[in-house]
Amino acid sequence: MFKKMFTFFKNVRIEMSHVSWPTKDDLKEGTTVVILMSAVVAIFLSIVDTGFGFIIKKLLIHG
Image (cartoon, helix red, strand yellow):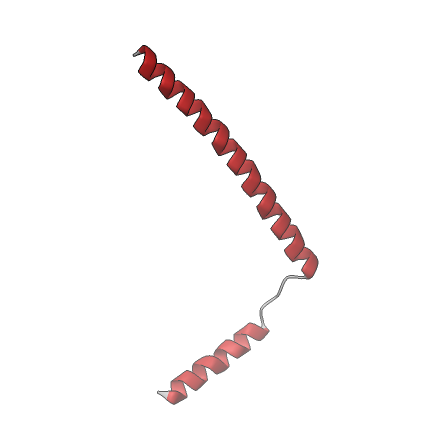
């Protein structure tokens, strides 16, 4: 059992050395994109929610 665990962690270490890690600039750029897109989606969903709420109120009052 310990031999299998040792082999597993040895293989993990080998695979991790092959990973291409992002640079600091790549991380900043990716974070900026995620934050901006999250804000855009939040604004869009707020507008859609407000619109549907308005339509539902009009249908219930006049229905």
